[in-house]
Image (cartoon, rainbow, N blue to C red; front, side, top):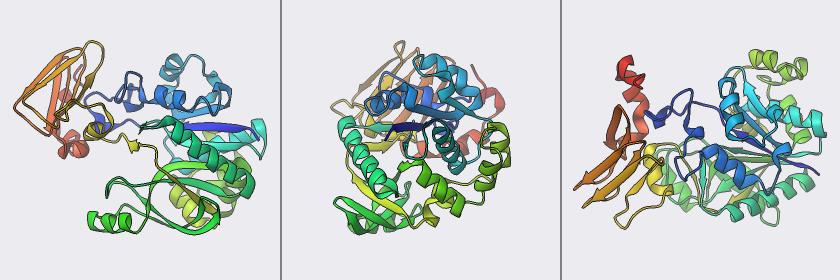
Length: 348
């Protein structure tokens, strides 16, 4: 069976303001290593699927920048969504494209562009196990990440009965809990709902037709017209629209240094740090120094930042604009952006 990789690379990444913009969102930025997040994701999965069997779903306006960034990717494999319509529609369209090119038996491995993975080989090993389960059991498979902390920012999965060695049925999905409930679920063996999904495209499309009226009629009518398809669907997340409604969900445990690069503060977990726990980075023209300082995150673009005697700060600097906040408050930049004048938001 052919295996395909689908990388979801949409969104504008407003939590990474002032660096992330609609024209250059976070998936196109080098936030963890030297390469942009999307390029890292594609390279990480290259041993599983070559460029011909990789689809990237993104905003229509990002097709050109991504094509330039990934010159080996076939242009028809960079799919520009005409409008944001939720992950159920995006994954249904990806499955539809793969079905048309390769038939029902093709296995689709879906990931997001904005992740950090500490152990790429372990990551690929679990994806291979998930693909084998999808191939042999004709079920929808997700990889639940073993929690490293009781994070209320993630959804959780409760594993159920064993379906086969190392594979369990999903007992239930849990929405983002409060911290007390997250601590309890970690003790009880719940897993993070990572958003890693693996299935035969025929099985997934059958579940969409059976359970997702928000998407299925549009796919039936407009399977070869991306514009009309996305115009006709009702936006819904794949978790709510398909997975929570399906009785065919399996889960594998994953423990490979996974983290969601969702805020500036998250970079303190996924970047290399100095002896005082500072995560310092930026582009080739940037430079950062921390003296008598600890636990800070600095991203310097074409400028120099010096910290002295401070802790737990986030400093993002580019020519003409500097953001200073705390690690904790860095998760709430949307509230900040709503209060800033356009002259600041659009500063170049």
